[in-house]
Image (cartoon, rainbow, N blue to C red):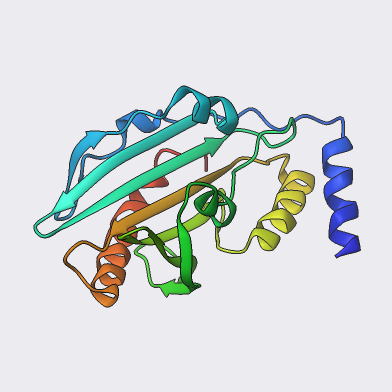
Length: 203
């Protein structure tokens, strides 16, 4: 809307800097999440790092019997100077992944006062198919909508001098499993990783 656009413009033009923040390096993130076990780090290509401009990242492969999952986290200390998450909604087609369905998944997560809402995409590239779950995580909330993320960016900046956020993405390859099973696996991983992730992001 025009009002939100004006608020975002005001946010970027404001001279007041964000509050100083302390975070734990994502490299120390847990290698065991319930039945999910760390397999390996996946290095980001230099050109991806340059475009992303995140202050910290995590890109790992986890697995459990009969399933695998990719976990990607990009954390941004501030969004005042042009750094901001790149929406998977736009990046996936750019990488050749074509969405076949999309929606929002609602999950009850330990430690959260109410069910969280995250994005759910089924994508394909040639013969490959995957389930993609992603959300934006700020100090006080989990956000699915890009529009809502912009709204809270402005609100938190004004009230708390905070514009830090993390993009969190989970990818479940649909190799030998169905859509429903993949969704259950993804939901299980999200429930296990989110409480742990809060320990690494500024509160």
